[in-house]
Amino acid sequence: MSGGQAELRGYEALRRVVADLLLTGRLLSTSTSPSGGTGPGSSSSDMGGNDAESLRLGALVDLARAGDVEAFGALYDHYHSSIYRFIYYRVSNQATAEDLLSETFFRALRSMASFKWQGKDFGAWLMTIARNLVVDHYKAGRTRLEMTTDDLSAHQEVQGGPEDEVLARLTNDILREALRALPAEQQECLVLRFLSGQSIAETALALGRTEGAIKQLQLRAVRNLAKLMPEGLR
Image (cartoon, rainbow, N blue to C red; front, side):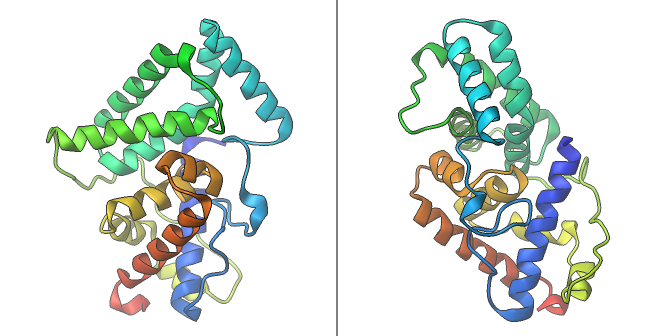
């Protein structure tokens, strides 16, 4: 799946969750997955996949720790889209996001020999590096938060389901505006969960919280997001 398709899929899932809350005053599940599914099955041991894929990624990490440059390149290919989306939706500037993405992987490469699993998967480790870089970026005062619209597509037409009318008006632009008005940690939670495609477990590792705390944070974030919708959608 391309980065643009993953982005649209993430927005589609977030739109449906918000639309459900607007219509019924409830959430289908606090563990709603970025692909739109619900339930405990949305968690995974790594960013991307089934057991075979997780084993492949684990082997690549071990090779990269031993100094295999090609293995690290394969890890970059697998993870860079998710990391970039997380950074981009925090800094809203393509050039800055690309710079911070490069710095994320440079720091990871420099620290590969010292990486230890110990309950933290490699994708969550990368996301933690990226998150720290974004925090440092704003602390340094190098930029002010600016809205950009490049590379962001309009919402896809939705067919079927009782929330069609709300979904038709709940565009990605509206969601993006509201998302950026949330407190930083709530914003990070939704970006990780929906736009970067992280599971509850991965988001917990990246944010240094328990899975239960992430479920509650996601619930608060979606409720606050719904409150920020224009009057006509409430």
